[in-house]
Image (cartoon, rainbow, N blue to C red; front, side):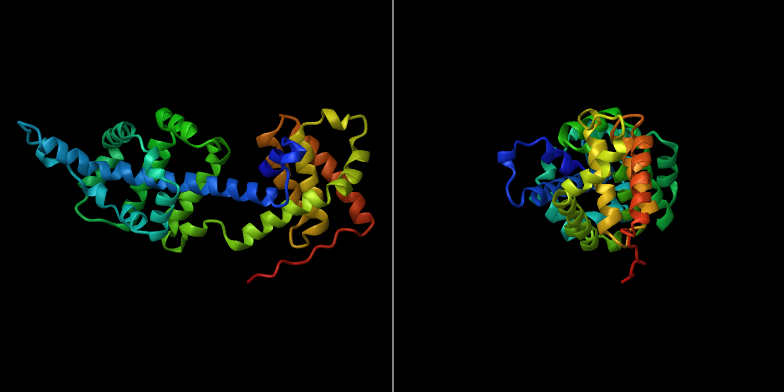
Length: 298
């Protein structure tokens, strides 16, 4: 959707063969950058325990508390695993993500963490358990990073598409913490999903005129020029899924595009897109143009 919208706003002279897939790949790269940086930020907050311990022990007259800073969090299993992942390190280097780090912000986030009861409980436990190791990392992300206005502003300033990807990041971070060993940082998006995205993108571009032939009669008194651009794109994408993607159930298509319309367009867009797609689907079914098959599982 974002790629199609970007292309609609570009001058025709700027559109060349390969522009669509190039823009799509760029947006997917941006999503991967944000995810990698979020995990890096979590790790850096945890690692700051060692920085804090060294700084306090180096005081001219350190107190007993200065000499007893608990650094357990710095050796958290998930932190160790992500920082030791070669693909993760490749992403950090190739996208120069370390340069984005704000050391003062990391320090503030760490001190915010140390004041929480869950952190105090974590460091008081003499041993490590998988559940407690995961729980404290989830806490850093959900309660420290996600809810800290300074960090959110930092993400907005550092990543242009943070606002679009923020909700997805919660799912990706959760998936990583559940099964970190299954993640391939060099291909966060599966080949199957990547192929689907490219095929849908190119299909919508190729079939745009035909899609509009089906959509325009359903607009009734609506002026196509006054309908939100996002709504039009979502309807074109929905029609293409009806006609050219036999393994995607029509109900799934309609529900997905209703959700996208609500999230990215006007308050009335969800209902509007739902009504138009539903009417088009009824006509396509009557003329036997919708052929759906069960998805073959690999």
